Image (cartoon, rainbow, N blue to C red; front, side, top):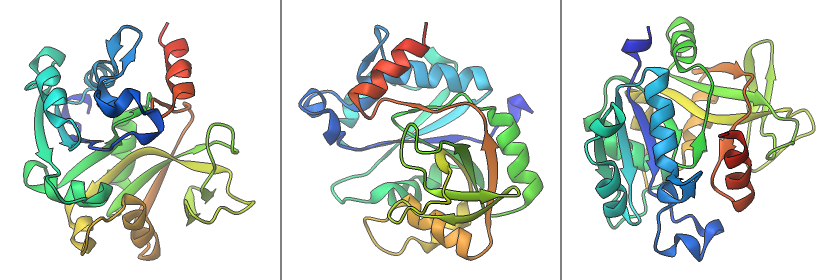
Length: 232
């Protein structure tokens, strides 16, 4: 199973405004974590999980990311690039733009996320549940970020980043699996991935996989400190 993992899309085109002024000249993916650019750790983790192909959706300072990562061979991966261009596409728009580089099914990972969950098990769950999309969820209880998912009996009952409720104990972990056709609903730009998830939920086409490993991120200075403490 490990050698047959779906490709992984990494959304790495954001401006990283929360980390300014540091990210005015350095893309978030290249911020130093334990003496190496963050994307070094991210790609190393994916390779160890059994991923073989990565598509990087890039925008701001894209050339610096491509210069460092190259074709991915140094990481034991095949890496291709999808460029946002001048138009603000949003996370779902960036994925739609990358579809010609992707297989029928693929993972989606945020460019600031370090997620140690078992990717092969997530993929197997997606295949077994036979839905158009899958969201990984984690029982967060508001500890590391605002919980935004009602998850009961292995099902997502409600999901909203904008309107949290007291029965939301889980959070969108940050790793999704999708069928290409999901992104046919992207009709304007910018278009957010959360809207795609919401549409799938409404159509009863959103599967779920509960992970037990906490998430790490480099979208904030405190997040970088926590990841550095974890990467002993």
